[in-house]
Amino acid sequence: MVLLSLADLLGKRTPPINQELLKKRVDIARTLLEATFESPHNSFSPNPLLRGDEITRELGIEPGPEIGQLLEALTEAQVTQEVRTKAEAYEFIRARYRILKESKSTQTE
Figure 1: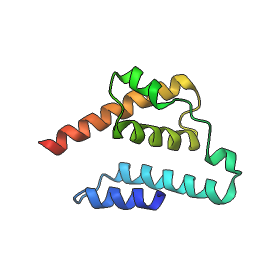
Figure 2: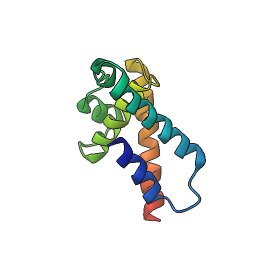
Figure 3: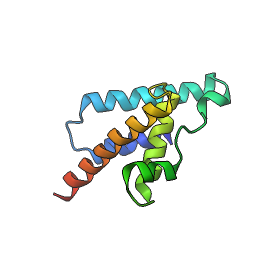
Figure 4: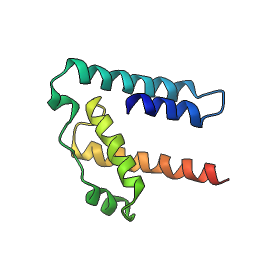
């Protein structure tokens, strides 16, 4: 799944690819793969800081694919220690949702 995420990024973008975004994705992939092979299972599958229903209430949106994308991104952020608390999780989800909305609006233009 980690490598598919990288392939998806490379497949969706037309050259030139934003190097900062690519570096961030590669760093996340590296961390996740290292966690898979070098760390105990607990650190790779952290207890979720937020549930889908909490996200829908916070963002005022209906359940749907965006919730799954946000939960996946939040799990990655927890594994990489980018997010450690529930307050950080809410902040992360709000920021990530803004990015998702912006991405959708540029794809429809």
